Length: 145
Image (cartoon, rainbow, N blue to C red):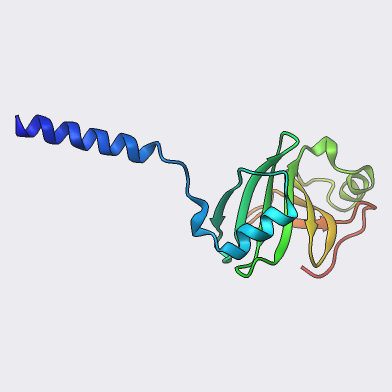
């Protein structure tokens, strides 16, 4: 009888633990406050710390998935969202065809950056590590990252 009670207790505890909502309290208060100020209409972000130490807020805006990065002190770094190849601006598509005609795009992102402004991050498949190239909307390359 003790074994059955113990098994039931363990089952109950594991079920209740698995149903708990992700607790964003591990993100610094400054990050939570900065996110609330920058995105006042977004009320359910998921936070995690990435390999570089930035705090990433994952959220949906107008049905699209976004990721906003913040420094530990709450300073906003950048926000990005994945886009489809057909959503890449025409000037960038033209620049890609000219400079990388044989490369396959593996990912495209629209990025708003605190230091670099608005740009598009295009990732190309290549042997070894994939290559990222950043473009302005007019098809010129971004310098400085």
